[in-house]
Each structure stands twice: as C-alpha cells, then as structure tokens.
Image (cartoon, rainbow, N blue to C red):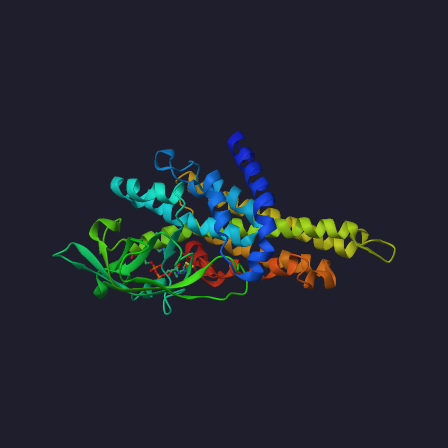
Amino acid sequence: MDFSLTKEQEMLKKVAAQFAEAELEPAAEEMDREHVFPVENFKKMVKVGFTGIGVPREYGGVGGGALEKVIAVSEFGKKCMTSASILSIHLIAPQNINKYGTPEQKEKFLPRLTSGGELGAFALTEPNAGSDAGAVKTTAILDKETNEYVLNGTKCFITGGARAGILVVFALTDPKKGLKGMSALIVEKGTPGFTGGKIESKMGIAGSETAELIFEDCRIPASNLLGKEGQGFKIAMQALDGARIGVGAQAIGIAEGALDLAIKYSKERIQFGKPIGTLQGIQWYIADMATRTMAARSLVERAAALEDAGKPYSKESAMCKLFAAENARFVTNLALQIHGGYGYMKDYPLERMYRDAKITEIYEGTSEIHKVVIARAVMG
Ligand code: COS
C-alpha cells in the first residue's frame, strides 16, 4: 500500500498546519472560556478554501475528497478541536448537495457554502431520535397547490444550526411509512417559520454552536428536495458514513496534538534531577500513545481512501471512528497525566483537550452504534 501523499496533498497539509498554528491555536483558549463561535476564523477558513474541500471548482470548491478532508481537519484538530469540528461538520452540507443535488440546486447553493462564507449544517437529530435516527418525527407535507413542503418539528444538538445559512434537514414527507417516508430538504436561514432555539452549554468544543432548531409551518419550495422523496434515511446514513471519517480525523488530530505536547513536556520537566522522559514509565506511555495514534490514522486514511475510490466504506468508517475516538480519550488522558498538576490547570491546554476529545465518542454516532454497524457488517 502506498501511504505517501501527492504533491498537492503535501501542500494542503503544510498550509493547514500553518493556518492552524497561526490562526486557530491563539484563539482556542478564549473560545473555550467564552463559548464564542470563531466568526473571524471561519471567514479566514473560507478565504483559504478549506470550506470548499470535496466540491468541484466550478461550484467554488477546491476539489479533493475524503483524504483531503482528513488532512485539513486533523491538522486543525492538533491545535484547536472546536475549529476542526466546525470545518468537518460544515463540509457535510456542501458534499451532500454536490452528491445528490440537481444541477440547479448545485448552482444555487454550493457557491454560497464553498467560497461564499455561509456555514452549512446537517439537521437529523431530534429529542427522541438520537441513536435511533429512523424515529424522526419532524414532518414535511407537500402542499400541492403551492408546490411547497410545510415543515413542522424540532431538531436538537445541531452543530452550527442557528448560525448556518444553508441546512440539510431530514423530515417525514410520508409519516405513515416511518423511515422509508423520510426525505432530505435544503433549508435556508431566514425562511419564515424557522427559528433557532436553545444554544447548548457543553463540556467541550465550546466555540462550535450547538443549537435547537424549530420549524413551525415553515414553507420550503419543492425544488429544495434533495434526492427523491423517501430517500432521506439512506442519504442521512451515507452522509454519516462520510461524516464519521471527519470525526475520525478530528480524533487523530487531537491525539497527535496531545502526544506532541506530552513528548515536549516529558523532555523539559525535571524531577529527581532528570527529565521525566528518561523514566521508563513515561516512555511506555509515550510508546503506547504513538502506536495507537498511528493505528488510528491508518484506519482513518484507509476509510477515506475507500470512499475516494468509490468503494463500500460504511464498516471501515465506523471502525475508524470507533477506534480513533477511543484513542483520542486515551491519549489526551495520558498526556494530561504526564503533565501532572499542570495538566489539570487551565493555564495548560491539556484539560481543554481532554474535555474536547470526549465528544468524538458521541457525535455522528456513539461508539456503541458503531459497534452495531460493525457487528452487522462482519456477522451478516
Ligand atoms: N448506507 C446506505 N444505506 C443504509 C446505511 C448506510 N450506511 N445504513 C442503513 N442503510 C439502509 C438499510 O440498507 C435499510 O434499507 P432497506 O430497507 O432498503 O434495506 C435502511 O437504511 C434502514 O436500515 P436499518 O434497518 O439498518 O435501520 P435501523 O433503524 O436499524 O438503524 C443505525 C441503523 C442504528 C445504523 C442508524 O439508525 C444509525 O446510524 N444511528 C445513529 C445515528 C447517528 O449517528 N446520529 C448522530 C446524528 S448526527 S450528530
């Protein structure tokens, strides 16, 4: 297997790393403390082109695919997990409109999401439809006279939701059919009847806004149907297969960032008259962290390569996210432990990274859901 990056991918990695160090890292602590969305940094991401990854140039994108997303998101994750999360989740909307959209939908919505500065969101989850995504209750009933869907319901835990300009929203267009009656609609911010509700206060990734969305007789033109009626659940599942690689990338990023900090600290910190990194106990921690993180990266890149090759990757996506997320918690925990009391203090980034890492085991599907997906795939 060829693990080398192309010249363009090497360049992307370098640009993303420099961007993360210069723009994202300095803002990370304040974002965490103040729970503020990084408006200026998002504008800069747009300017450099990160928000157009995976979308063709004719729609304002920068091309590339899943591997390019992994490269950029993991570099962001090393320095600022909130920013990695914002980019990774933003990309779901343009990539899905690109995949399922009509030429008219692509022309209308993609340039706004890639180079136009609008944030995208993916609205599936509801208070009673989390892991059981098929239990969505939001409805979108077609008014045949006006040719509009009338959207009613409440979504929750939607990253970027209330702030997003363009959202992919899942609703039942034929409630009698359950998940087979689910469809995907493109919804624009400002549509009458669509309001943002509660903004959640979270344990980590504090700068990424996580919102409740309320739809009350919200009229969506029938031309905003993404894919076909009844295809919504499959679109959601396929979108999540891709999105899970994004979370895997966040998880390897934060693990690599924490490992870098742990190595640096263990060489600098003198106890008992020598750097703690000379102690075998610390070396064994570092060796375990490095080995597992390399394994996580390999799984994430493998899933991305399969997606880019157009091969089935649902199982691999679940495996990479499951493993990389558990590793992110493992590595941030040990990196904090190596820093001792300093690691526990807010003056150092480790306690934030430890809190930020936890979400990777929960969003875009919990670790337990990934085990369901993997077991079904391997056991038949
Ligand atoms: N790609 C394409 N189609 C898929 C699919 C995938 N990855 N996963 C399931 N489907 C299809 C199935 O093939 C089935 O289609 P048919 O009826 O035509 O055979 C249909 O979708 C229903 O699938 P299934 O019976 O497996 O549905 P379940 O209700 O059992 O749910 C899980 C499956 C648990 C895997 C799904 O609900 C899930 O992923 N839940 C987690 C949701 C999640 O990640 N939430 C986070 C939201 S974003 S923060």
